[in-house]
Length: 194
Image (cartoon, rainbow, N blue to C red; front, top):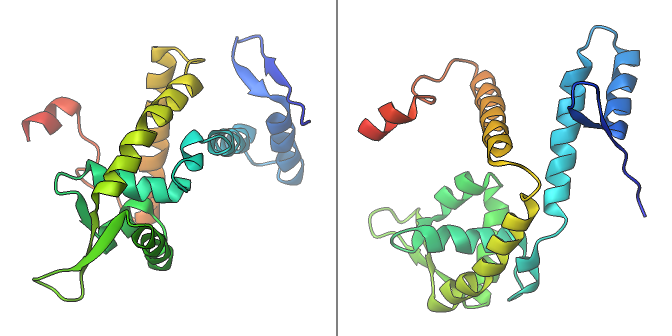
């Protein structure tokens, strides 16, 4: 069994000893770096891995996380359908992977493909009643699981975490685009009035 060591510093802030040690190792190889850059990166990756390890819905209806996400996305759409290309973009995976996922969901009777009437190159994926049913049966377990996972943080800590992750993601997307993306970040009041 793997052991974990979490440490609360004098500031009252917590860290994981192994992540701090890895960050110190990077510092020993490159003295100009900021160790908190590496420690933060390592902790986000470790948190992501921890969140991925236990997903109760994966054991219902032969679903994997990816299959569930496709069905959930379709279920959440007003028309219960999406273009294949929109699914690729939303899930941030390759078209080949989405094709394989949809193939399996279609084979299991959860979805069907429909050619676009306007553009024959486009294909819609439509949720079938059996697909909607498996999402609805799975959803209470997913909600319970997520709620249970986040019980250890206060509402304010969750708000700060969401803010920090959104800020990190915006910064990464903006820099990777090579230019400042206008209109991506706006106050909620402005967004509601638009």
